[in-house]
Length: 195
Image 1: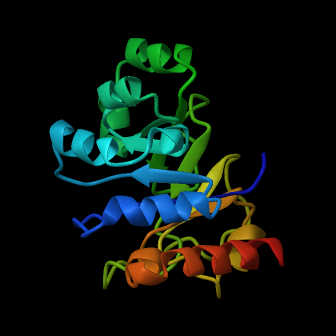
Image 2: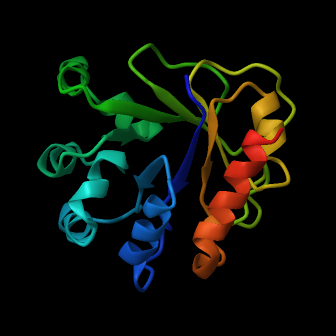
Image 3: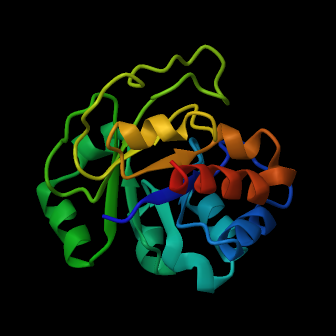
């Protein structure tokens, strides 16, 4: 599996957010995960309508299968609770649609073979959530398809690679200074490839 660097959308509304997404994708962003806790489907749809359709094939969306289908997105991300409530029939339907499926895990254990990617976190102390302490920075083996999330930066991404992760998901590193989003993304991606 090729290494991947994801950017997770800010949980808060950002002025000009779609423009930041466009700049990141034009700079080569592998995958954007739209995850806005508490948002309704119409709010997600409005944001997706503001993102050029050429970028939709690199967007994962959290917990909104209807929008995944409607906008022709890359795939669907499921939280642990969404995954536990998802029926086997629905999961099979998503797989038949050839969506990329990912899910969050909080232990380095795979919840099954339906998932291309597993977001394991928090790996390091969170940048965006003070007091959210990392738990997995010292492990040496993770399930296939694991992407580290939580406190990932240019300084610790070599550790992510050493853990056996196939990539990392960036949140706080990007949105702490959104005006530097592209530069930060490129610096972290370069650090991955140069270790």
